[in-house]
Amino acid sequence: MTNDPPATELRIRPATAEDVDAVAALYEELHDAEWHGDPPFRIARPAWRAEVSSVLESPGIHLLVAEAGGVVGTVRVELGERPQGAVGEIRRLVVSRAWRGRGVGGALMAAAEEVARARGAGDMRLTVLVGNDEARGFYARRGYEEFAVRYRRRLG
Image: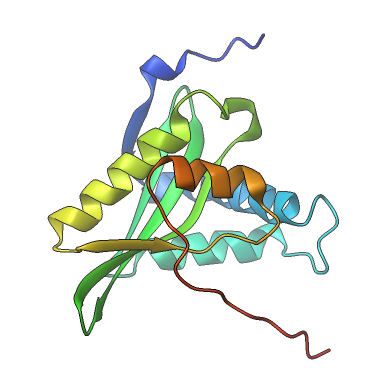
């Protein structure tokens, strides 16, 4: 058992410049977890910090954090126009491993969907690695359905 506050004390809010280091650390944790601790390439923390700082300055991108005695999760929502209308895109939903299973991911998703809905999006999309069964189950339980397949070929 940890001494962390319970998830009922969770607060979802827009990220600020003061959150850059905490969000960069979560991005690094996600990257390593996606590759089961052995990614084919490493991304240094300064690069993650630069990405987070850039996101905070980008119109049409909303970075949210889950806070409970510190930042314990984050989600990025990008809004775009498609022929069928406005679409929200989830990028990098990350919950610290210590906080998983405590409602943080669900709270972040609900907040992300509300941001997209409030800005006119009629659809929300996201990408998950094929082998990430935990995330795929998480999204399926929230009503997300598979609708496309992406392919990749390494060129080096």
